[in-house]
Length: 344
Image 1: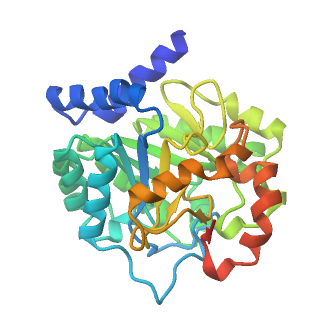
Image 2 (image 1 turned 180 degrees about the vertical axis):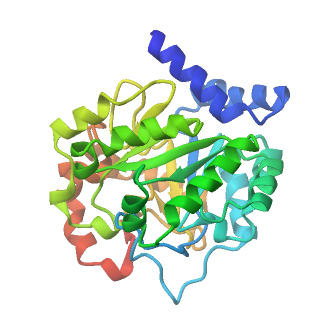
């Protein structure tokens, strides 16, 4: 119970610090009262703004999904979608990519969300967080930034991202954000290698030393560049080592059930919107229930509620790592790399 309360206190500080008291009350009403009576509503969104990126990360989860013959969603379509889902109870949006800071309208989209009492976060590689951008994002009301670091050692991070000097540039930008009062959560992927060599634990210590506000650990999944790479997936023993690193007020994990969190994609509280308009369970699950350019989101949501897809899963792990998912969809996904996500 004590850990639960500490986790909630940490979440409130991270999510709500940039809002007025009135806005906080509205957000908490949406989170607890409204969702209690409308349990099937979407609560949070991941919106991929672009597939463009300056890096070639070894673990990119959306690798292979960019298509030259498709246009990314317009700003008008994105605002329309945000307003629609917000009217259904959504109160939290994470903007990602690709690299979302490469989308020129990002600041305006964040400001629109803030004006409508929607919590926003941005998942970024951190390279474009220069002084002016930090100031604009803070003024727009962004709640926090998920900034990716693959290691506390510069050479390992740079090797993973395929860019020399990336670590130094990103860490300097992180320190600028912290100095300017923009909250930063370090985002990293737990791998067999960084668990074994202690780099994951060292990164948590490093994150504390530079004044970060938390660490988000993502568990390796067979998606993007790692599609079909079963040998890279963590064993139960390795997952247990990750669990031992969790801290209810600083370190949390996504994509793995634990005592602090659960995967909201399994419970349909989270959805992902791709840069092309496909509605997916999350960015790592390459299946689409429909496209908002072709079908209204209300109809897509009703289809999701009826679809047997979610009945396959126990909720004990990430959808992509569950045996039932691979038995039913892996062959289609592996044979459709040029046309991901697969429509179901």
